[in-house]
Image 1 (cartoon, rainbow, N blue to C red):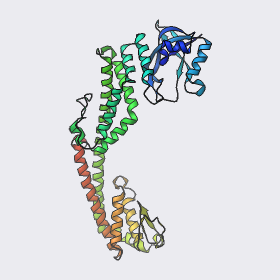
Image 2 (image 1 turned 90 degrees about the vertical axis):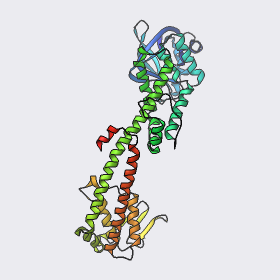
Image 3 (image 1 turned 180 degrees about the vertical axis):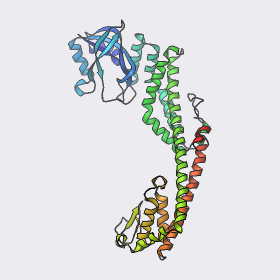
Image 4 (image 1 turned 135 degrees about the vertical axis):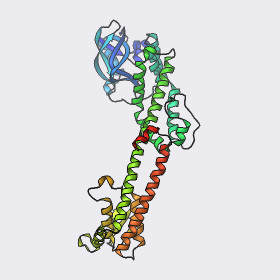
Length: 402
């Protein structure tokens, strides 16, 4: 005879009588180190978790019953794997029991209603703890799924949203005012993070609920559902707020970089270094040099191949223009104070070069420096405006870093 630990639909005695006619019910049992969940296939499964336990029923199977159950559980199709784990029966006695575990499907899913209802009914019939029955209800309750979807939509939505959620803690800033002040991009990022981490947050809520089961209220199902929703909403808001705090520090750093960059440009106007860069137009090593990024190409080669969609600028000043680019953005020794050579600066280089094709090399470079300086000043303005948005709803103590 084989001891078999059932935790899913085989808790239902009628189903077991059909599948395993000679099976004998021993009683309730506990599987330590595993947590019950519903996987993406819609069926019960268990995942390893040190502090968790799964409650089920212990059966005695004949070899014929075990062979029949192997077929039902899809062992021949490598769906469930036959494992042997130590379980504890109602008398506290430990037994080695057969447990079917799907080791491939660990994503959360939702079951068919009649499937989960059989599990819930069996748990109630066999007097499983109320907290455990409440957690089983999570997998079949459509309202909690709707609330989660509404919260996702609320984070992503543009403009002013009148909807509020009763499950949001007053300690969190997930209010209409918070929603209105928070830049939508940060909320969308938060919604994406929540989508990826929802399983972890649900598991966190389950662990917290289990730790509170001895002080639970009369309506344990309602208490558990509110705990899940509050855990998820507060975690998402906290994640967004943390990112915003980090973003403000990054903005401050970017502002310092831009200020330093402008000082570098101002110093270069009357620096001997500028004359060295101008002299590159006569340097044979730079005679065929060209610069290409973000769909813009600056070159001295009139036969330079490129895509029709590229912006091609052919100029005899290209060696000096390229030298100036490297001096501003690729200089060694000041990596922490080098601005990102992004599209705004590329366009500034291209516009100034194209507007000065008939000018001297020195004039071209000075015009480029003016345009790049203007782009850096505009960047500082953008940084200040974004920081004003973020400051509207971050905690005052967060400003200590600034």
